[in-house]
Length: 560
Figure (tube, rainbow, N blue to C red):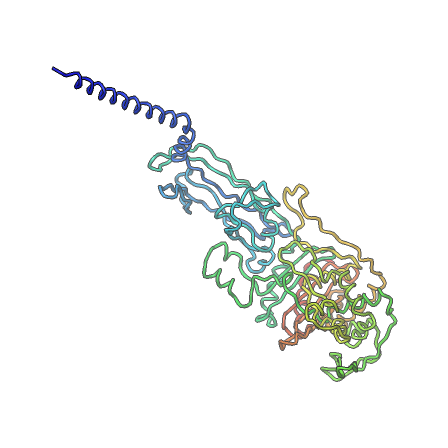
């Protein structure tokens, strides 16, 4: 028989068990409510994620076309099979067999058809950098953030027009089972191709330019730049050498990419827009325009060349010689402006610089855009340098002397210009005072008015003064001038060529920079060319024959 105390203990124990059981049920019900109601959406999404794969499909970039519609840069389609796995979810594997169409997507590889002949114009593609990830380009926010593995343009038109060339990625939703096997295709959104861009490039001229410069014995071990435009600033051909093949970056060969990046000759630099060089005598037409426009001289002004100008100063006596006297010991005698341009007479331009003054030389250089960007639609353009007393004091801590003005007046000393800069200035003279911003792209597919506006502006230079300078440049490419490779051009083609040679002494390197700039016909130019062979030698002997070969090709293949 239980005692009262024993009965009481059993009752407490049963009560404890009941309480524990009730508490357990309460916790279980609470957790079920949490899982089903409060966190149900979250776990449902995890479940869906385990069995639904979102496959992003890259969009092809727009093509880059020549002015005749020829494809300069395009795409080659490749088939990729989607392979599912437990670790990464899925992979895209190049797979030519199309047995299962549901598992295959079409993507693309960029193809640069002209290879190194067009590299500095095209640019290349490369994966986004760490600092670019998840960033949205301000120019095209509708394209969304840059994602890991995405390709973006580097250099050239690929970079400048990246927003237009990039398309919109597509996507495909695939349901898989627990083993990763495909169950069904839930849906697909096709990628949208980027916009094509059309350039003003003449594809055959571009190929010819590259061929001539690569095969010339004068450029085999040299670097340099060439640009050709029409009278409205449209770029017909542009080539910087040495060059590189953009396809190497697309193929992803680390050794070849490293070789290009570490090459001592720096082939990736576009010397047309990103190189500064002493211009030498091709700067003299700007000096001549300055003197005529300031009414310091007129077309009847003459100067007696004696081969040397001597300056007596407190610091000593300094002599400045004409190239004709230095090389042959001869003088020009009494000459006018036309003859001085034709013969590139240094002493004439020394004196011209002295009577113009450095301030006016700077003012007119600025007017012709020589110490500012041209605004060409290619990235990485740099600004030329036209020195002044203020510049010299700031940069060198030295005063300006008359000798500095002499050097500036013949394109020597501290002046350093980009080939595109001096080309645009000469083109303004060729076009009777119309300065045109150089441009490569002429139209963009579905641009909706987004194509940048390139302008030509009137420099308000007297047509009569320009005519005098043109006469000097025509004489330079005629018998007795310095541009001897063109002496028989009119006889062969029936038109004059206006030109100017340049031989820029660098001071530290044995061979001077070799320049040649020319345009034809003089009154309404269809082709304007500027060529630099860095450290090549005399402009007439090195750059002149190359320019002549290109002019021959152009006028043999284009109606006048």
